[in-house]
Length: 239
Image 1: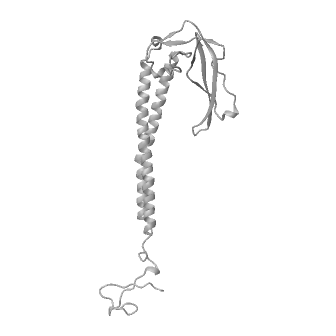
Image 2 (image 1 turned 135 degrees about the horizontal axis):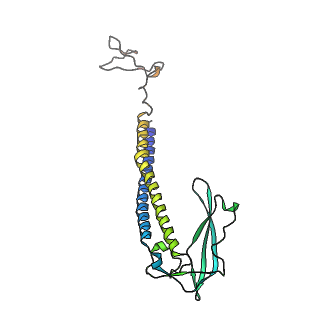
Image 3 (image 1 turned 180 degrees about the horizontal axis):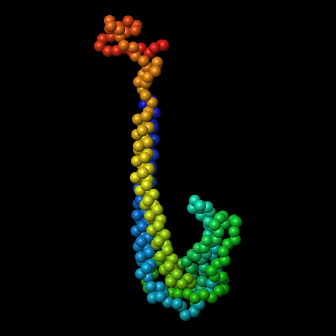
């Protein structure tokens, strides 16, 4: 019985430690996401794409379209995405654009057709080059020169949305971690204490015919005639 009680206590202790660790990890992740998201979004607010980039005098030519797709599941179902990037050339040099993701279908990819790309091979498109160095990460450069076929002003809007999404994820993670530490862990600890306190009683400590004790008679003898010296000798009835 004692070994069973010890094993149960260890199991509750392990569960409590795991839940607490998950809670603290979620809190830490939430704080990091909040800080990074706030910084990322604030930096995007300060950018001036019209001053940071200049439109090139000649068009860029799309040389190749690179496509892939992926599925994600968020608890509400599957979502299919198309990921595109583009190889383009300018004055004989080739560059790769940043990635461009589009939601294809709210379901599995096999049940849908891929979306059309933004650009097609051979198309002439406007492009931009940076006027500053280093180029802030919010502009999401696809190549070392940061030549772009996507309007830099749109990059700023995307960066703001990314910062907001990071902050939202940080808040969710923080709330989850606080709930784990402040609600789940104490509840598990209390359940463990109750389970330990309500463990099986020791033999002879419960009521009923198997646990009855007979007191000695007036001559100090027990039921079998033993002399009782200052204490009661119990006998299990029916033995």
